Image (cartoon, rainbow over all chains, first blue to last red; front, side, top):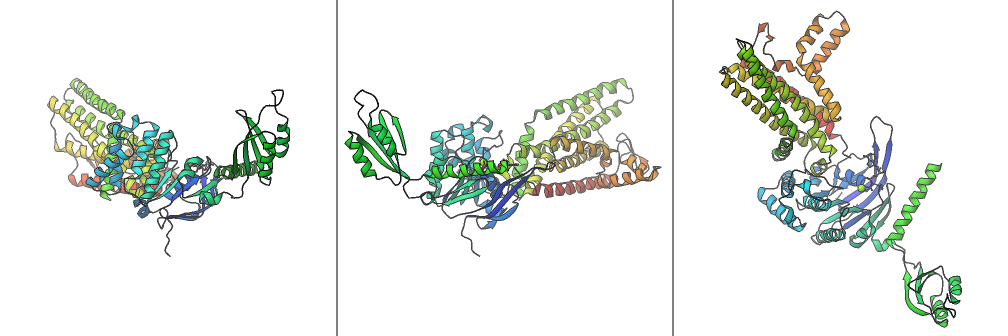
Length: 326
Length: 263
Ligand SMILES: Nc1ncnc2c1ncn2[C@@H]1O[C@H](COP(=O)(O)OP(=O)(O)O)[C@@H](O)[C@H]1O
Ligand SMILES: [Mg+2]
C-alpha cells in the first residue's frame, strides 16, 4: 500500500519503566496523527504532554510500547528513513571539544557525504545559522542560543526531506525565535516537510500549516489552526469614552451599562465593555451614544487557538485532579 | 560502514586524548620504570630482571586499568550527556556505534601501550640491559590483554552504570589473572561445590593469565622473558583467545545496546 504521509502514528503508546522500581509512566496513551508532504506541522502541548516522547519514538531513540509509527513510509526505527531526515533534539548537547565545523563534518561523515559535499554544505549552513563569527571556537564556549543554531545546522547537513525539531525556539531571544521561524518557512518553500514541537502557542500559530494539540499523552485536536477554532462569535468588545459625571466622579450611566454587559473594565479613562454573543450590539451602541458616550472601537470576539489550548489544558488538569481524588 | 565506524573511532580518540588522567597515568608508568632503575641498582646481578619485570608489569597493569576506565566512561558518557541523540539518529546502526567506540579505545590504548613501551625501552637501553625478542613477545601479549580488558569494560557499560561496570570489569580482570589457581581448585578441591564453581567460572571468564606468563609455567616448562620464553605459536594462539573474547563480548554489548531506550 502506498503511504504518502511523511509521518503517520497510529495509537502510539509509550510507557516508561524504571528498572528495579515499580514505577510506570504512561507518557503516550494512544497518539494518532499524520503529517503530509510539504507541510509545516506544529506539535503543541504544555510541558510533560508527551511531545519529546513522541519524537523519541519516531527517531528510534526508544522502543514503542504499543501502536505503530511510520516515517517517510518506513516503520520505525528505520535507518533508510534516517538517511533522509534531519533531527534537532531538545536542549541539544554536542561534543564540546569540537568546533561547529568539526561537528558538521562528523555529521556529514555519518551520512556518507564526500569531503567536498561536507565542507561545502558545512560552510553554507554555518553562514545560514549565523555562526560565521564563531567558527574558531569550541562548542563548550557557545551560549545556549549558539548551540541551538549549531543543532539546526547539524539537522540540515544531509539536505533532508523531513526536518524534525524538538522545541527549536526554546532558549532563544525574540530575534532568535523569529530567525528560527523564518528558517522553517524557508525550508517549507524549498519543498521540505517540517515537524516541530513547542509549548509556545504564538510560535506554532504563526507558521504551522496544521497543528496537533497534545495534552496528557493524547492528541486533543488536529487540523488547520483556523479550522480548529469555532467560528461563531463569542461576543463583542466595545470601547467607549464617557464624559465624567456632574460631580466629576463615575457617571451614573455606567451602572446601566454594567447591567447590560458581561464585563466592564476601565482603562486609560475608557470603558472596555464585553458583550455576550446574543446581545444586540446596535441597540447597545445607540444606548451608549444617547448618554454622550463616544464609541472608540467595536471588535467581534472569536475563539482563538489560545482559548482552545487553555481549555484543553484546563480539562486535563481537572481530570488529573479528579483521578488523584478518587 | 567502514567510514562510519572510522568517524566514531576518530571522535572517540579525540575525546579520550583530552582526558587529563591519562597523562597522569603516563607519568606514573614512567615513574615506575625509574623506580625499577633505582631498585635494579640496589640488587646486584638482578638489575636487568627488575627493570624488565617492572616495565612489563607497568604496561599490562596500568594498560588494563586504563582500559577499564575508558571502557566504563566513554560509552556511558555518550548516553549520560545525551551526545548520543545526534549520533544514533543518523543512519548508523547501533552496533556500528559500539564497534566504533571500541575501535577508538583500541587506538588510544595502543598509543598508550606504545608510549609505555617506549619509556621502558629507553630506560633499558640507558642501563645497558639487552632488549630481546622475548621482550617484544611479552609486550605484544600485554597489548592483547589490554584490548581484551577494554572489551570486558565496554560489555558491562552497555547495560550498567560506570561504578558497577568498573567493579565487574575489575573483578573479571582479577579472576582472569588467577585461572591457574582456579584450574587447580577445579581439579583438586575437597568440596564438590568448589570444584563446580571453579569449573563454571573458568568457562565464563577470559583467560587473561595467558597474556602474563613470564616467570610462570607453560605446559610444564618454566618460561621467563629473561631466559627461555614462549614460542610465536603460543603468542598467536593466546592472541586468538583474546580476539575470540573481544568479538564475543562486543557482540553481547551490541545486542544489549540495540534494545536500550535513550531517554
Ligand atoms: N525517561 C523518563 N522516565 C520516566 N518518565 C518520563 C521520562 N521522560 C519523560 N517522562 C514522563 O513522560 C511524560 C511526557 O514527557 P515528555 O515527552 O518529555 O513531555 P514534553 O516533551 O511534552 O514536555 C511526562 O510525564 C514525563 O514526566
Ligand atoms: Mg519536551
